[in-house]
Length: 249
Image 1: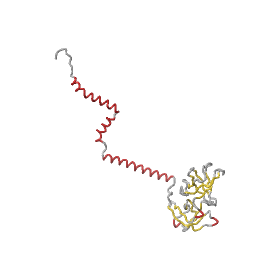
Image 2: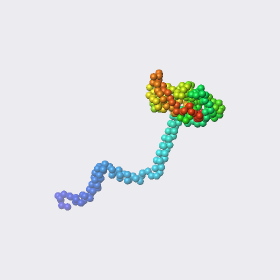
Image 3: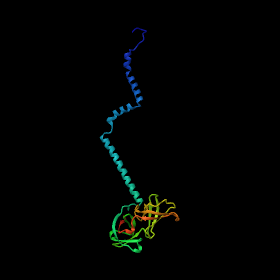
């Protein structure tokens, strides 16, 4: 090579030596423009052989099943605990059919006698229902009969609940066809037509038994309003009842 003449690399050789850097540059530009989408797809393609197979899927399904079982067990425990706290263990008692065998004309709205007694498992305090709803409670028993105190009897006092307004009250018999509902609040916000059921907090009868509907409201009574209730069970026409044998047996 003559002295004083600069060394020059042929263009073709420069192109051959620089193509890896150009490819890297183009790749970076592509990643930049696609916001990493191509890189993510490439990673997914390369890592596919290491994804969970059938064995790993079984592990996942087994874990999910275990979690579901644990949650179900917890829900059952919570339900049992709440039922215990609310004393709802007697919500589904055994029903015993019984015919009405006697009624006194002078006490038509007070009591009746049914043809089942202690031999069939009836005890004082058992709730008695008829088509339509709650009728009363067993007052006394003999081996083969039981005397039922009706909701209309003056000695009857049952806690009830108006679901629409969520108000408690005490249903008291007046010795007539319609008992009176005495509320515990000054403004119960009830009106004629509201449904009355046994109170969820009642300890005398099972909760949520249909009692009747409010017929009239007297807001002038002190210290709290009162309402007359039309019973849903037709007491005057009953010839057969069902006794709710409590779960304490």
